[in-house]
Amino acid sequence: MKKLFLIIFVTVFSIPIFSQKRVSQVKTKEELLNEEYCSPLFNTSNADYFDLLDDRANSSAMAYLNVLDWLQGRVAGLQIYTVKNNLRIPYIRNQRAAVFVNEIRIDYDYLTMLPVTDIAMIKIIKGSFIGGWGGAGGAIAIYTIRGDGEEEQ
Image 1 (cartoon, rainbow, N blue to C red):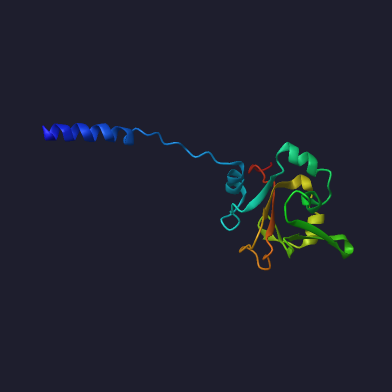
Image 2 (cartoon, one colour):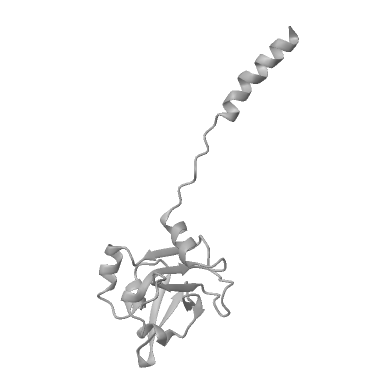
């Protein structure tokens, strides 16, 4: 009798455990952009994202010649200072930010030559950033549109 009771008890309480459905975690837009464009060094959740492939963001960015001008006022703590020769330098929380295009550190004057139409995503990393030397003030990572991988004939 004890064995029968024990078998019934185990089967009744083990059915709900084994019948649970595995729900796949739905990824946010930021996580999908991180997977598509960012390497593990730049893959952080402590950032602000701007998807310029989205029509709304892209149409508002087209009016600006410099992407830093478009970013000003859209990110808390980001300030763009203009120095001699009309060079714009970004500061995040009063510290100079490093600028990366496709995860390669660039000079600030390169952004004047980078068309806004070629930008797919902008990621503003606040706080100290281990990926770049001199990037204690954070970083601005700009990712350009990738080709579809097909060779032209």
